[in-house]
Length: 366
Image (cartoon, rainbow, N blue to C red):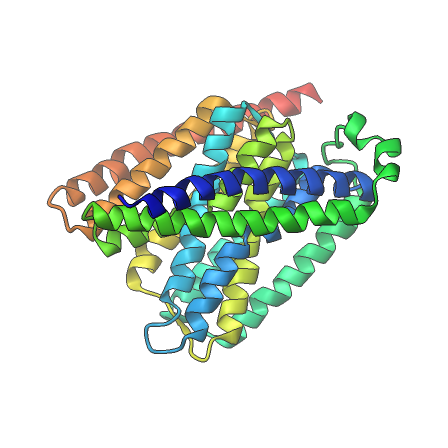
């Protein structure tokens, strides 16, 4: 373990914390100025910003050309989407307490996330995602963002922004809007730079410890591009902006599917190849994680600590499966059978019961 790796590791962590703080502060103040709720800002401005590392990695992969180019682009999007829900929201809820889920997230954004995830699976069934399909995803992105902002101004369903002294009219008037935009720009720069430094350091340390490149790619790099979402959501939860944390994760997933994958397919000189493993395992897992959000979010419109811990536990189980599969370990079949036929069905049944009971309580209260 070289001193340089330690410097990059510590520096990356510091940059992530400072970047998340600046981004949340700037985005919250912009929300107060525009009259939009923080959940809408999280679904759009913050989500697009924290998806920047995925966009840079994926586009960089496809523009380099070659027959193998494009595989990282899809894997990066799918892996990041799984991490955003199970890791980012899981840690945010477990550390920051129950996260508030706006009604529009349950009624609109999660169903859209599920629908787009299924659409990507359908596009992938022929083993590739071509340029035309990329432009379709980009068009859907433009429609989603425009409709989200317009509908938010007409609806009162979102959780109102908590206007503390820092966000009062007097405080906002005293400071120019360029300061808030500066916070957002600085926050994004620190998040991107911090995540790259952390991934570089972790990869170097893992290599020195003898961990294979394949396992490093499946774990360190995949988690690395999701670190901005994790840092932003956790800090938003700790600062009390618990709806911003949820909006950031869901919005980032939509931007990953529509913007990152869409732009990558549109600018790629070749089609984006889709491996059979992704069609059979990883994309279905991404869809299952998206579907799991509905009953959990509908349970009192909060993501409780124990539910966040459950998300995080499932992410650990998923990473364990990736490592066992990559190493071709003898126990991977037994592990997969236990997860497929025991753990997942019981969890799905539990979440369904929770969702049904929550809906009954909400209907009876009306």
